[in-house]
Length: 382
Ligand SMILES: [Zn+2]
Image (cartoon, rainbow, N blue to C red; front, side, top):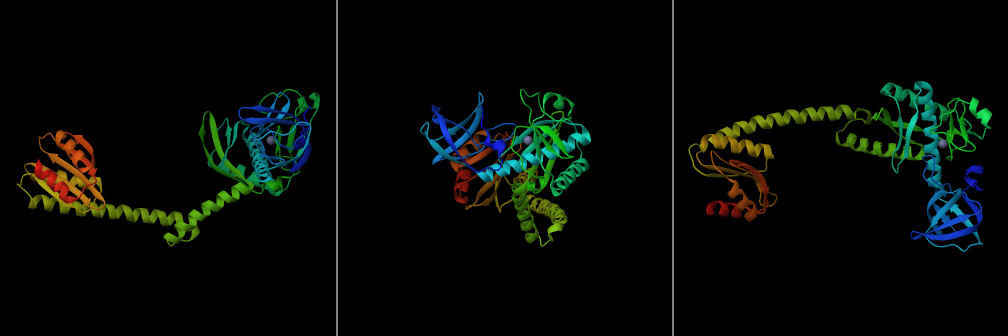
């Protein structure tokens, strides 16, 4: 018989117990107590962590009707031990888990969908439903869930007999053997669940649904509750604050400011492109008729380097090589030769100039980490 203090007193942070067994297993010790407040993993809720005396509890599992505390060191059998659970972790999980009930209950009564997957990750909580929910529906569920928080409903946990159970419309992921534990948030949800929950919905604090995307036959919702939600929103606000400061936009006008600056950037890029076209045309005119051109240019995008080389090829006779960059930052290159085969040359170039790149036989592109004099010496040697 399990002596599950986590059910009798879900707010118990410390307790005294007696060590019944302690066995080594896979580098840790499995400790069984006569009673425990450590919740073992179950029902989508991760286990509690904490200490037994000075010994760290790194995992807790239920196995064959016993709660196994996976400990870093052994504990003396038959001796009393004081247990302390990591309350911050447990309370966070109670907030997330209880919030999940409210959301799943509301989705079920509005759409009739089932919760078909629940994962409490390190960062995000996800719930999967077997039907589609649009943005408007999502915001409505979120509003109703938060209203249930503000109403500070009392959680009711009970073990109905088989007959009563059969008559109750409760949510449950699967048919559960033995006594069924029902968790009711009045007017919002009734669900079979083995987890730990807050005593009143007000303790959930707040519920935010962050995203809803197509997943399998339905949707996956990302959600956070309580303190974890507050700290995530604070981090988002900090990001928005930085954008707001850098763009001199009010916090609620950053989206519009980013749209504006993106448009400005696009038109600046178009202007640069037009000016480059003009410049490249002039350069090609100046070099018209020459053979084997080697040109050094300030830093440009790889696309511009390619364009310039293309231009030169249209008016020059031999091999055209463009190196854009600096000795400090290295160079991007484009080399072309009408009807030529540059494969051996570019292989030698990459080896000699610490470069990488390639392409078609008559046109190659890449980058190299060498200085101008070394590049000039290489081409002189060809
Ligand atoms: Zn639950």
